[in-house]
Length: 376
Ligand SMILES: NC(=O)c1ccc[n+]([C@@H]2O[C@H](COP(=O)([O-])OP(=O)(O)OC[C@H]3O[C@@H](n4cnc5c(N)ncnc54)[C@H](O)[C@@H]3O)[C@@H](O)[C@H]2O)c1
Image 1 (spheres, rainbow, N blue to C red):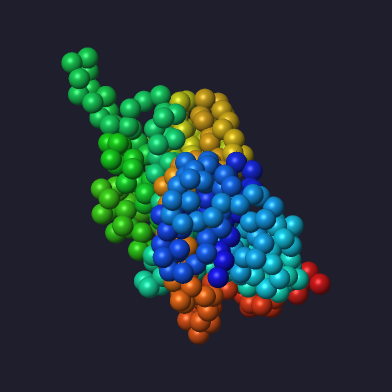
Image 2 (cartoon, rainbow, N blue to C red):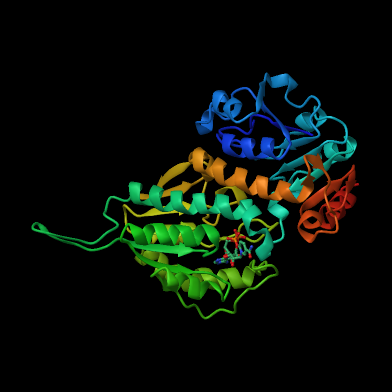
């Protein structure tokens, strides 16, 4: 079976779905790995490193030729799907609810598509959890971006010239990215406070040496360890209660998300205006609509002396390790669908079935199917 690894085409994307080390493991498992020339360049994996591991490098247009399986980071465009072999399988982030045109192209091509953002979050699937691995990168980078922009130190310093107090960091949303932002800011010596709508987050925040902000609000647990969608009334009350915390912070890092929904609004323009000049806001939810009213995805703006940075696709900014982790996730997932070098997905496996959006041209992910029906 031939596996194709095309160059990512999303603007600014630097990651690659398979790194040379994983290409070698796949080759050892009997898979023929074909990599588009230059696909790993921006993540610092040259073509020669893939060749050393037994992969074949081919020119752009022909990478999909004869490939039964395609591995990508981002969803392909409908055009790219059309260039796949009829009936080929795809493993990538797809976020199908927001990309119905891609789903339709997959259906037309009788494709089978696995979307890693739908992977069930059960213990057995942790090694395949690409959302978590990439969120780890995002959280780390958010803390570094804030530290770099703040005109103050994160750590406390006691020097001959005087004592510098530690930076005050507030993290809103303590999931995978938020916890990594907390851990990184703590390692740099900042005083960190954090809030999340899920009850389990409190202990996790505290275990990292940060303080959990208690708000007089009900928890908002959804299924699978996620938050549920919150009412506008809840969010308005949350913004009211968190206002003083935001005003007192040197840095606010927001990471709040609800699967399949627009990011909740946590920080209004008035709240940013309540922060001291020189403060920094980093919004990791920028690509999902933003947790901060002033956020512009991919932009950094100055609002009355407060910098608001809407980080877009942060994992791409650290492409070597983001690709390495993503590639391991892909490899571990492939171990469920490739047997003896051949594509043989076991759809009775809840991880395989739960991740599948389209199976041999039929949409099997119910929310996507419902959305498609609404549109017809
Ligand atoms: N395999 C597994 O078992 C597994 C893997 C990964 C994550 N998880 C669980 O899922 C949790 C969340 O995962 P994620 O980081 O991908 O979630 P996510 O990216 O969907 O959301 C980020 C965080 O935002 C929080 N949030 C939502 N609305 C909020 C609001 N109004 N205010 C403050 N916070 C808000 C969520 O509770 C979540 O912690 C993890 O912390 C973990 O407990 C389990």
